Amino acid sequence: MRSIYRETKRHAMSGRLRLCVACLLISVCGAKLSADGVDFSALESIVENGTKTYYGGIGACLFSDQGTLWRYRSGGGDNRIAFDENTEIHIGELSGQFTVLAVRALCAQGKIDIDSPVSRYLPELFSGANANVERIGGLKIRSLLAEASGYADRPIPNMDGILDADSLAKRLSGAKNRFPEGVRRSESALMMDVLGLLVEKASGRSFGDYVRDEVYGPLGMVASSFEKDSTPPEKSRFYHAGGEPFLDSSSDMYNYLDPFFSMRSTLSDLAQCYSYLLRTEDEDQTKEKRAIDSEAPFSPAIAGQLNRQGYESGEGWILTEPSLDYLGSVAWAEGSYLSHRVVVILARNQNVGIVLAGNIYDQWGINALRDIGIKILKRYIEEQFKIPPPSFSRPEVREIPADVSPQPGLYASSQGVAIVGVGNNLVTLECNRAYSEFAFSTGESFLPTTENEFRELKIIDSASFLIRWNTGTEALMRRPSFTHYSFIVPPREGTYRPDAEASGGWSDFWVIASHGQYFTISGGDMKEYLLLDSSPTTAGILCDDGSVFFGKQVLIDPSGTVSIGFAKPDP
Image 1 (tube, rainbow, N blue to C red):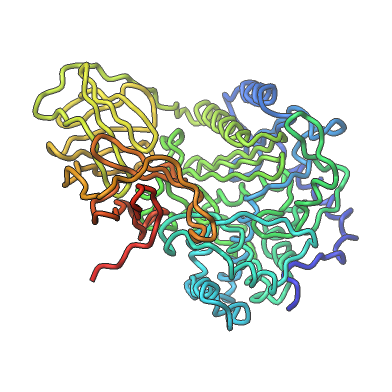
Image 2: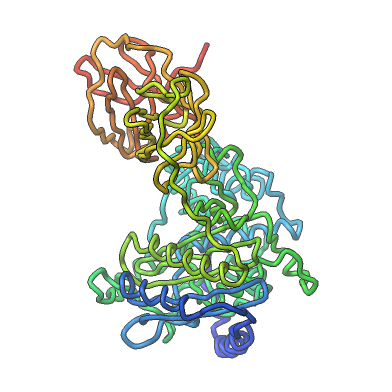
């Protein structure tokens, strides 16, 4: 089978022309638009402080639906060049957004139906394959776009710089299914590779050519590419934690073509793209631009996701950010590639967004970069639109009425376990590794005494209460209906690390713990679930279908050692 991703060297000679076009575009879109009353020096200080703390260099570009409003740089891409809007950066997982746009363009052009199984357009990839590959072939294209395939994995460096269909089929045969289709978001480079092959097959063009012509071109992006790195002079080098650049050989290990991970761009190009995506109506839209659906990525793509995962997502975007929910509709995304970090945040009601890029090898640096972007966006919107962030007001601590005081102890739901305590006119809550104290407010409502992820605790009756988070997530917690287990030997507490092959790859570890007379299990999703009394040697797990433990049970051997098996279906 032919390669999915061919290097398109025949376009190399147009590089100088594209660079000239880029300079012209930057001179037009880079001009500051009117922003009366905005203190841009305050925004510059936010970037400068972030650079001193975290980065070798940061570039930031604030934009509206009409173009760039403000841009600033601090630090360097390396020791020779500034980290500015023209510096080439690897955008990591943000690459998948552009693969999604390419598939959406195919759909708008009538070449595919996203509610069809992916095997309809790639029969040769899935025919005669094992059961796992056949299952993947039955997944709807819409599920792949929403990253709701139920598979989760990371990119594998490909030293050959290409990925052909034969190689993809082999990787699919060993893919590990973790969740049912359509119940939660889980990133999968493999599924994005399948979409890349779909783009090629449905368009009759190479993946790189189609994205360039049907996505970059209509959006005016002139310095972006999925193609193999040519190391141009304005490239930002990668940095080790100690500040020294990576060796060329280290960078080459990650220099491969992948629709999930390998795109390179500039802040100028990204701002151009995201500025367009903020436009709800555009009288000047060309036919090619109309082919890119600018609304679908920002619509919740997975039913019930908020209560399963604590946030909502679209196609390539996270749609939940509690610190910005007072602004209305917000979308954000981020990508990391070696030491490169990129974050984009869109405040869609105000038609304003920010894209930032940084260069440091620090796994937590992406969180710091997102915080910088949030601070800049809040400050700008407050000054330009007179919309200040809400302030936290600590509730008065007063006596809890006896008829609404919860009973201390363990409560549970399919979303996790909550441990409640009562004392000093406060209710304490531990839930999914978060802690808060609540003071009585009015009726059956208790409010957190500090600003944290919780919004409210509401008493339903003597055996249940409702937790509300700032994300909009809700969980109805109840006291267990049983008071003891029928185990011959109780499960042994501790951390278990299963063999990846034996466990099917669904979880890297699990932890058994006790809370009074009850046992719980937790894993990599940061949630703790109640073990249910099933038999003298087994326990069920109270969880929803978005948990890695869904459909599984705890098996207890005579020594108390725990293993995990698949639960038997109800008769």
